[in-house]
Length: 508
Ligand SMILES: Nc1ncnc2c1ncn2[C@@H]1O[C@H](COP(=O)(O)OP(=O)(O)OP(=O)(O)O)[C@@H](O)[C@H]1O
Picture (cartoon, rainbow, N blue to C red):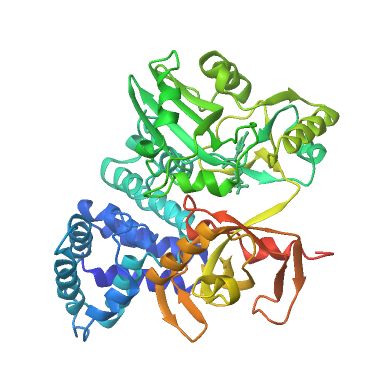
């Protein structure tokens, strides 16, 4: 298929607020795509190419981009092949080869296509809300039930593959998608309540568990083969050998476990969140030892447990990984939940997660079956720009410009980001060093004091609240914002919304 058809559909989708019009436009496109272009096309549309990030920066791209072509000739397969090429061309002498490949393709693109290709390569496709719409479009185009398509997407963790399955192999193949050891599923997520008693009101009798302030892990073991995945399903097995050892030591053949990992200091107190996350980085130092704590089990020795109630899954967890369970208690009594919360906070953790004992494991959903309660508000925001520091921080990029997601396009393009504040608090020397290098590598332009960057870096910010402000376009500003750490495991479209922050306004 000509890339132009995809670019035009993306433009139609961006230009309308009507969900139905979006779904129809996408379904029409999906029906017309040849089988081998379905998965690549879906990846482009949702801003997640099959190949992942291929390491092209804005600067490199603008240096090769020449005059656009007059007539559209590029195909979806051409762009997919370019990404494959960029991914496999690495090492010495590769920069010139990569530039040539980029120049060849972009010189054959029309102006609209150049813009689209640029956004695909940089990973800046602003389609945060598009995944749900796309799943509806797949269901419509394949004449398959929406629920089955959504479930298949959660279980495969792969929208493109789900679309291909639905459109090529048909609705029965979608319905047959199950858990597979070795293929990560999207994690179940929690909603939020103000205190333990209100959380229990939502869930009824619940497993009230410590909320450890580490990083989410999902581990898959088949025989001796163990894989560890992050919240965003990246495979980090080789970075966490001590977690692999723990999983290998369990008395099972096959298992899928869900949990949290973090490092403790000599006294058993949790180390700062940043220490855990830094272990997930590419050349992370190994000086802190990670420990896994598991809170759920999705599969044991040939049995899928996803649809079993939590009470049954916890009984299995106790059987297979008793020593590595997260602390918690099953109760319907608010006083007990309060006590568990106090114990978690006293031990230096973030709060609790309250989970209804009858609920199945809802992969990829943020529902009412899991409710988190944390006394300190933290939000995930996207870095839009960074200011050069002064004094002791001279020469370092320091003060962050923070953006919240604007899914509906209240302040600009839907899926864009609205600036809501700045902070340079909470940054360690190590983070300053890292961010100075990182932000210059994703720079889009700069002025004397500020480096503007691609909105791709998610940072977790603790705050005391928000106030009304005329300084920022969203009309709100963060109060006492401080950096907790970078969230490599989250995508920019997972950032918190401007609406969620506005809800913190006094009297909102
Ligand atoms: N006992 C627990 N049960 C579930 N999640 C836990 C638990 N302890 C810690 N966590 C962490 O808390 C998160 C649950 O909150 P949520 O689903 O909102 O994810 P999140 O968006 O990563 O939130 P947060 O930034 O608050 O960790 C999980 O992703 C996991 O990393």
